[in-house]
Image 1 (cartoon, rainbow, N blue to C red):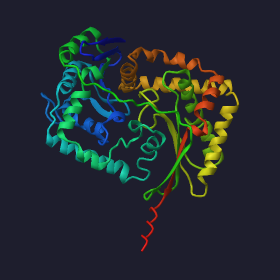
Image 2: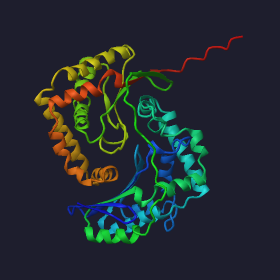
Image 3: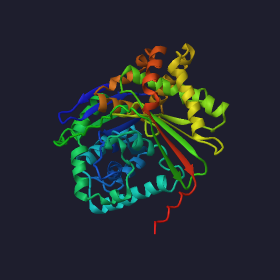
Image 4: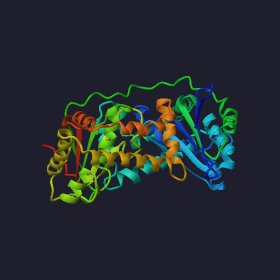
Length: 431
């Protein structure tokens, strides 16, 4: 692996792999929905769509057509702390797609027609994925808004329909100038490539793109939660009740964070996890418990800032939320009071390594590109990918217990209960 930085600030990671004649190119911009403008919720996601509307030398949809013509795959996404664009193509087309990515970094075709069109697309996405879906937005939209106190961590990042409509062309143009710039981006090229040749192309196509002079980032810190938060909602489309809960996790790259990663694996990941054994197998409350760190919008590694460990289950109406929470508390208390056995900790470490190897070993290299880009973007250290094994190995039973006591305490928890059926009618106004 090679790591470079251009004079305009662009970070470049090259990871050669000659086993398959393909290359995966990823461009990650350090702007996610966490720090989108106030009163413009959904703005970062809207802009992700704008990046496919054409640039100086590639008209509308021509970027996608170019990938398809080369038999490749592509996608983009908006996450808490980045927006990314990536494509897997034959390695012989690497130069073409470096040119294409540079073309849209250099300047988009930001027109009112394109903006209006994509506002409609994004609003339809919100309606289909959230407003008209049972359990839509629950709990992945709801929990951060309740658990966090800083607006940047606590707003509706999918977007309020009125605020999506309110976005203006000058705002979109300024957003592009501020954040879609080389000094706020990482370029990753992984696959059947020669690093020296790739750097020649990168310098040619990206090297003259000017840096953004206006890169400013708000304070996204969260205060320590000292009191449990609870809320309830009614979902007219949901057939059964549901329960969601979350805890703030330790700061990234600390020993406690790595311990929390293993706690997640011990408590919720897989049929042998503690909560699955109790809530699914023993009590029969539900058929599945889902959750994780940065769930379900990313991995435990690809974020930068305060984050939640969250979980969710759908259950029958015959069991109360308090009964389920009591069983969850019992599982957590055991982890806080007693040292985890060496065998259970060893299984969690194997799970952690297995998930890591699955991510970096997928056929299209998207998982590898994601980790390299995230570590470069947030920590200026893509080589950290090679340190994760050692971090996992150092976690002890004592550190697991210490972390559980501090971060799984009741006063660090947020709980949302969901009831099915139509919302109750408002009381009549007094005469």
